[in-house]
Length: 388
Image 1 (cartoon, rainbow, N blue to C red):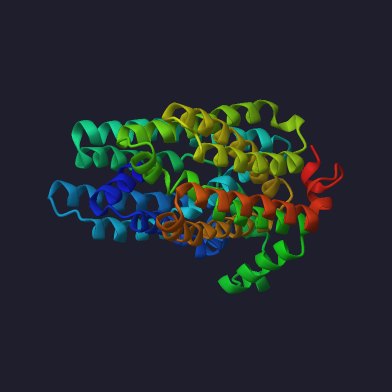
Image 2 (cartoon, rainbow, N blue to C red):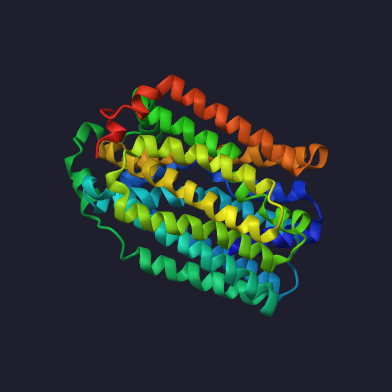
């Protein structure tokens, strides 16, 4: 809901695609510090860190709600709050995934990641439609009353999630000499662990590539596409985002039921390549409704690629490194920032469709490079990522 409400507000108030991409980039500012959230999760428990993060979201939403009702809200305030939110929220996914890993055995992780994606994607469908409808009917202030209430509810629900037993057991098992290592030492150990594990390094590179070239097209640029390409309003934007999220939701349900029967590494690579193909088709869709249909297929490809990646990162990571590996995975999201800002510069110069073609071509070439470098660790049936 927030991305729909604030993205549309910034674009309408400023009439600038560059400021729109700046707003979207600020959402990923915290990826630079996400490894430290992973370290804190390993130290203090993933549930505890997640609760604190979501309390911070509620505080920022309440602040923006107050500014809106008092008539003081401006694009500058929105960008500042987006920056503060962006310092924390990128780590939410990693903490959530790590919490699932604390809760369930390895054999159930692919299905569990499918269910986790189902809740995420269904929320995006509802949020896209509800956010646009609330703003159109009641205005931005009352829409933010709902956002604040939902964030506050999420804090209460997270308090009941997972278990504190694993974190307590890990602390009890830590020898006295290593009871209080520095944050930097913990982070360096996590980085070294990923670097010396080929399939983890390959998945990190693939995540960096996807976040730099695929996600900017369907997230940060969607308000521009709705307004300038399809000439629609925020309700039309909501339908576009809902179409994308509906595809991801559909695929997540399938993955939660049947994901364990596939070879995760191969599925991840093939679905990622298909994702670029559908994004390219979307950029050349002749009609708004055709665009929604193609976005549905793009959402399916995204989910089919991302669910196995998340499950394999959990399944093949040693438990004591789980939070740090998830934090490093969230660090890869930072490639969204240069991807979005570059798109903001390219679109006014060469056009939207040419920019999409450049991004998709870069992504497909990047996947080919990853396969040449680490293909044996992603494609072989005997590779750790393909063990069912």
